[in-house]
Amino acid sequence: MTRTDGRANDEIRPIKITRHYVKYAEGSCLIEVGDTRVICTATVEEKTPVFLKGTGSGWITAEYGMIPRSCQTRAPRDAGKLSVSGRTQEIQRLVGRSLRSIVDLHALGERTIWLDCDVIQADGGTRTASVNGAFVALVDALNGLKKQGIVKKLPINDLIGAVSVGVVENEECLDLSYQEDSHAAVDMNVIMTASGRYVEIQGTAETMPFSRNRLNKLLDFAQKGVNDIVAQLREALADVL
Image (cartoon, rainbow, N blue to C red):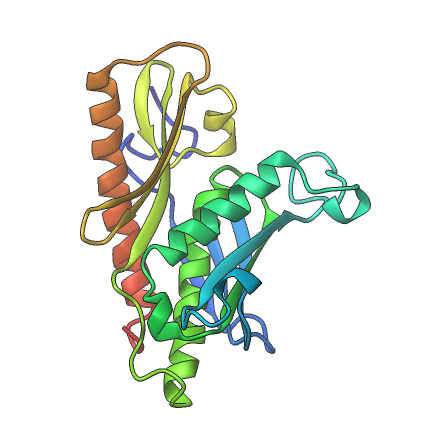
């Protein structure tokens, strides 16, 4: 199979990260993954959800949205609906879970960090790009707390990366574009730490069941992709990490 952008099957798309993209946020970036672009911001709030009050633990949560013409056709804003879509809720929870997994929430103290991920252009992999961009915004926000003396050290236990894998035209592929994702027989999103531990695996057979051997190959591709992504995240945050 020849991929539309000429990549090898186990190659990620080009990534560009622009930090401090939004003036007022404690942490922010524009992350570009191929033709997918997401603005991620981190906001520090000096309170926690009620269920954490008095525990000494902080919280990290996320919101996700796509602007109406981020796609090939206009998608109505969630703000105009009675509730957000199931897909939006799923991605918000994914981003929040992923970032909480690598942060020492007790070291954060009783405060909340809101991660807002706004897709301004979508060409596949918006949820994985959101996890990666949100990590950059989060690190900058936490570094701001460290500089102010609010936390003693950066309360991060590991780096994290997210990438998609799938089966397209009966071949395993890494980091699917929209065109590939839209007719993939298997679609999977993998979130891993830099140390090689899994945070989340979301895998679905869209048109055909897949074997354990194929799953293993997809996970091998995902680990390679995450390693490549983490290396770029580490480079982008070299002055902080």
